[in-house]
Image 1: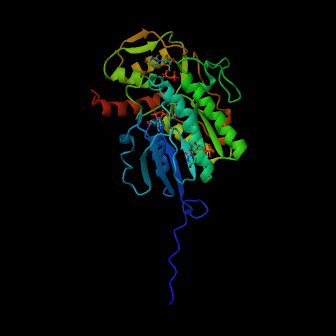
Image 2: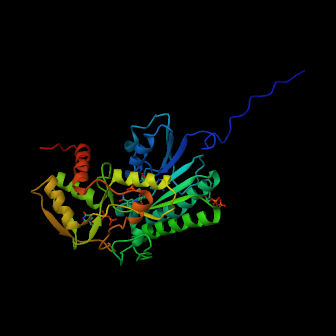
Length: 335
Ligand code: NAD
Ligand code: UDP
Ligand code: UDP
């Protein structure tokens, strides 16, 4: 009696870049503001399959609605503080609340997300041999004593303050990335993101650009926190996504600053929003929160030289694009 051989099992390595040219990419925090724009860009490339893992703390499925059901797209409800088993070639690790009111809401959870979440994603990268990019932050520079901030600056950070769950959390995440790189040979990329704005920002997340635009549209006074001379540099989200992809695809681990060096005081920002959106709105000076950095502006020499990247969208061109999105979501049409 002869027995026929069973057909070969499908290779478990089918996902691997060695077996097919498709790239399977995990985006943690992909339902959030920057993450969802990144997913849009990655999905434009037909060779990419994208998996989003998100616990919807500050993100929403709505940001990804155009991809739900697409054959190259998968959405998983998952908290990165728990282990995750998927087979991927690249990991963009964004999962973490980014706005002070959200990251201070449950600081223990924020630091767990930064530390345990990053550890899990590194464990995953190690198991499957994936390249991993961390979205760190300009907050690792704290209240900086040198200006603008180059990547070589070690920062001025309060380890026990109310922002520490976020900025110290990201500092530990960077340390973990480099330790896995040196000890286990993981391919890492670290982006230090400066303030980013654009459509799909949470309307009531307390960030300055979203606050001012929502306030102007609702005819409420713009709340400038004292002293108002503190500065930030705002990068439009499409520029940010372009920088993150260049970093992932390039040869440099970073850390590399990604941000727009155009620097504005909060009073100047309020005046610009007022002029562009609602010239008769009032500006109110209000109390600030502790440890607010007085100035912040990226030195982007490294991004220019190593990634050939620089931002293209000026604040005056980006704000109206965000206004349009906020008008739709708030149901306030242009008079
Ligand atoms: P966001 O809040 O819109 O997105 C973060 C996403 O992560 C959300 O979808 C949220 O639900 C998800 N998330 C949070 N905790 C999670 C967890 N434990 N498990 C799984 N998912 C979780 O914020 P964003 O502005 O898109 O920021 C994205 C990344 O960029 C963050 O890592 C942030 O620290 C970094 N960053 C942002 C800025 C900025 O100006 N927006 C500046 C510096 C750094
Ligand atoms: N991990 C994960 N997915 C994987 C592999 C690992 O989430 O595919 C988690 C794992 O649960 C562990 C962490 O990543 O908590 C670090 O993994 P590593 O293998 O580096 O360390 P170990 O498991 O030996 O502590
Ligand atoms: N800010 C403000 N009015 C607001 C919200 C924020 O003047 O309604 C100021 C805040 O004091 C800080 C700056 O804007 O100096 C940026 O704050 P945001 O929370 O947007 O970002 P981050 O502090 O993380 O850079």
